[in-house]
Length: 439
Image 1: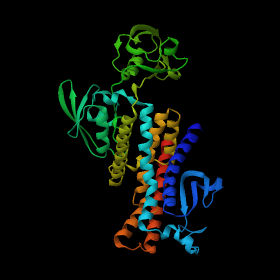
Image 2: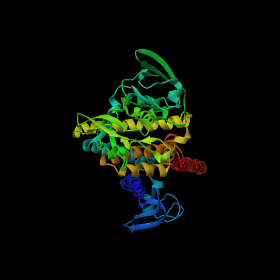
Image 3: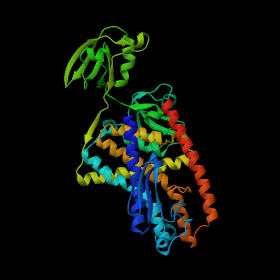
C-alpha cells in the first residue's frame, strides 16, 4: 500500500507539472481558465478561486485544464459568450497563442528533468562500478539468446555491429539503438577473435539481462538471511568469498553450482574481511528438504556514490536529460516500425510500481525516476495523435500553413479516430501491466 500511495503521489506531481504548463501560459495569454483538475471522475477536494475551480478527483490517471470556449458545458463553446468573455476565450486566440498553450504541458515535462536531475547529481548518485569496466562476461544464462549464440563466461566483447565498445555503458547504449536488429558481436576469447550473432528479438528491449549475459560480479556478500547457515556462522555484509571447500570462487555466479556440489557437508569457506583473510566453517541448508542447498546470502551490487559540484551537476543533468529523451524517442520510433514488441508498453500500474519503489529508496533515485517518467509523458503527449496535445499542435500547424482552421468535420472525425487509438493503447497497456503482475 505504501508503494502504491508513493507511486500515485509521484505520478500526481508529474500530472500537476504538465497541467501547470497549460494553466500558466493560458493565463499569460489572457485566456480564462474554468477548471484545473488533477485526476478524473468524482471530486474529492475542490476550491473555487476568483474565476477557476481547482479540484482533485478520484481517478489519479491524469488531469486537465478546461478553458473558456473549449469543449462543452459550463461556459463552453456551445454557450453564447459576451464580447468581453469572447475576447478571453481559447478559441478566439491567435494560432500562435493556441500553439503556445497546448505545447506548454509537454514542454514542462521535458524541462522538469533539467531542473531536478542536477539536484540528484549534487546529492549524489550511485553509479554501478561495472558500467565502466571492460565488457567481459561474468555469466551466461543457460538456454538464453546469448547461450544459443555461443557466448561463454569470460568472453570479452570488443564490438557490436562493427561499433567498438570499451565498457558496459557504451554497450548498453548500442543495444538500445540496435533493438529489433540482429546483433553481431566481436568477442575476444583467450586471445582468439570470434564473431557471434544473436538474432533479433523484439519481445524485449535488447540489453544485458534480456540477451542472457551478465558482467563480472565479485562474490561479495550484500545481505544475510536470518536463521540461515551464513548468518549463524558469523559471515558479514561486505565479506568477499574466495573459496568454498577446495573450489576457488572467481565471481558470484560460481557460488550456486559449487554449493550444490557441496550438498549438506560441512565445508570451510575462505574469505576476505576488511582486507584480512578469514576462514569459516558452515553446513549448507536444503530448501524445503528437497530443493537447492542454500547459504542464506545475497550479492552486493558494487556501486560508487558520486557527488558533483553545482556547475558539474548542471552539465551532467543536461547530458542525462538528453540521453533519456533520445532513449524514449528511439523506443517510440522502433515501436511504430515493429522493431520493438508492444509487450514493452507499460501502463499506469507499471508507472506507479516503478515510482513507488523509487520513492522508498533515496532522493537521488526519486528524482531520477521522476525525470525519466516526465520525459516519457512529455514525448507521448507530443505524438501527432488527435486528442493528445500533439494532435492539437498538428492541426494548429496546418492552420498556420493553409491560413484557415481545419474544418470542424475533419477535426471531429480525427478526434474519434484518436479516441479509438488511445482506448486501444490503454487496453493494451493495462493488459501488459496485469500480465506483468501475474508473471
